Length: 261
Image (cartoon, rainbow, N blue to C red; front, side, top):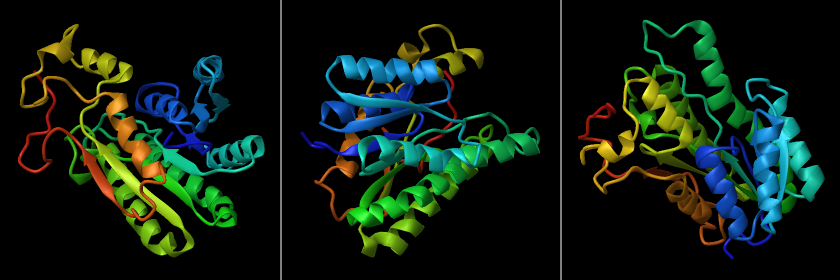
């Protein structure tokens, strides 16, 4: 097992990419901390993992609250006695451009997508130091490079996360901290499916996408992202640090990122 006995906290792991990662981590031998905004959702995922023979705990907290990140780290360490990996996956994807993005929406997006990862890593660092090192995996987005015109604040937050990843990898690499980032392309999750329906796409839209958006014939799945995450958190990547891995079906440069049929 590639993550045998490693303790990993995954934020935003009650659905979508986060849930897919947490479940695969357990199959690869890890013990996980499931985090979400609602306790029933977190308990559901953790309970299913436990019934399948894995180890998982459920935690909740709104990441826009600056007190929550340190509490999540403390609860994970209190339960398991250590922390080997932190996956900053939770994010808000509220739509808006320069004309329509208000101060509240901008501040909340930055608080969840960028400030919370900063605070989580800050709280985890003393524990990593005691253990001689640790792994952080930030889940960014290909929108970090420019983004869609209706995802301005989201794109800014993911660009900042990229800089955070590289800065911390450079600054704390000599202490054994490994900070890497996956930038997923268009990924089909339950939330994404429903969101695109509200934006005008029909039922079953993932099966109707032109090859320009899904050259393989399908969108990425949470498990596609999860398998890449396993590598960065495993002992197979002891020297990889500050890497930004664009996990997409096509190069960012040269493609129109607008998502419509």
